[in-house]
Length: 263
Length: 301
Image (cartoon, rainbow over all chains, first blue to last red):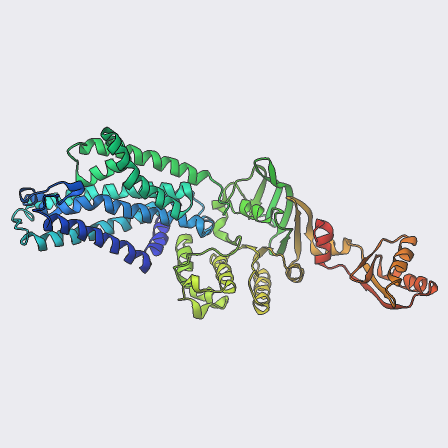
């Protein structure tokens, strides 16, 4: 398994993938965090879906990561794309047969691939957290937000909890991407269907029937990233989201271990 | 330890109602170069995939290096393979691609540059795979197959896209590997190449083995051909009827008469043609080559 992880990391460290992924993470982290502070007095809101997040919230101990927790869903989508592409490309390039000749344990390949992608995603999350907290700190004085509580022990605790929550959500998104890659065996199809579902279909279903969001996977993962929301509790999101991730992991593992490699 | 590198018994693969490979039996001795031939769709790649554990078999059994093909983890560390052409990551360099596989298989990374030099890619090791020509991609595929220092090398069309010099190099490489004890199981549509390098041959047609054994046994079993040509075009028909009246089958191909008969019968044909008033411009007894034998046995043109 360790060798599979190392081999996978060799592929993940190629410059185009690293710069592309981290560039997108930088963009989203900077955009969402900047809006949070720059539009603090806007009547149209400064948070997700026009939500207003005022100075009293941002000045709390968790204020440094309020922006970062909102980026969690977007980082999750990036992870979905990376995991899906890294998995499906083995079919489109035909490289899966090389991997299986060198390491015939299919579940070891799958497990190693997942671990390597999780390591990559964790680094991306930590990078995004640093960017978001840095921007929050830089824009706080301009937005007249006090930062006295941000780096107290409660502040550091909030930072750690938020990073853990975002990592968990990002892993969930990634597992969905990987499963789609295995099912569809095409990077374009798996990414487009994954993003379409998470960004559009779930929101449409939520608009038609709001309670549906309590049970849809993307909604649960977003809630985990934010540490819970007004409508969905953190524990509910963890249970439902976790069940989705475990279920889809089992389907993907069974498919991958039993299916003929004919391309 | 058996003396066989590959041994399959009644091996079959069925896709829906179609038998891609049907109850095939063959053995490949250790240290031999074995050619694997058959028309497109005859089941060569499917067989190779089954031997490598990439696809499951629906019937029969197989052994590779004394282990069952149901347990590929027992022998794959000693097997090098390139199936259906080279497949690598376009955005990685040739060296990085090999390092991915070396890391995965637990082989020394230092082997990578040595192998790239061996296949003539030493100076392009740091170029991205997507910039490689077809021939270079093929060479990288062969280098990847050699990574484990294999006891058994399975190559599917390794000379595709190579220029004549490259083909000669691959031929020499395979021969030298076989001389050093590596068993080479190679499929190719270049039958003349296989004829030069192979000791054994497995011939498939529509998923069934039509021949498996030593290549010289196959060629010796084939009837010799006498190629005859008269001075006039009208002599061809006359030569065919002379040969058939004397009990030998004959056909006209490319303005020549091909008579299935041993070389000794050429003098009889010469005399009979002379008696019939035909002056022969050509009378050549010929041993059948692999290509003709292949077409004859597989019914392919």
